[in-house]
Image (tube, rainbow, N blue to C red):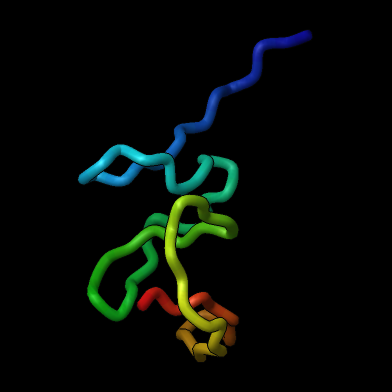
Length: 67
């Protein structure tokens, strides 16, 4: 088997729990309602609220709104 490039795992800055895998990273240049953010296709170890449709500059997305 060949050696592949290992992508980073993204961790919580407070508790260091894993939040997402590097392969799930969509954008590092996303701007959320509270400021700069990363956009992932999947996340883990987070509490989320209801799914809502949001119209963003790049299109319409269904997002899990964090409460």
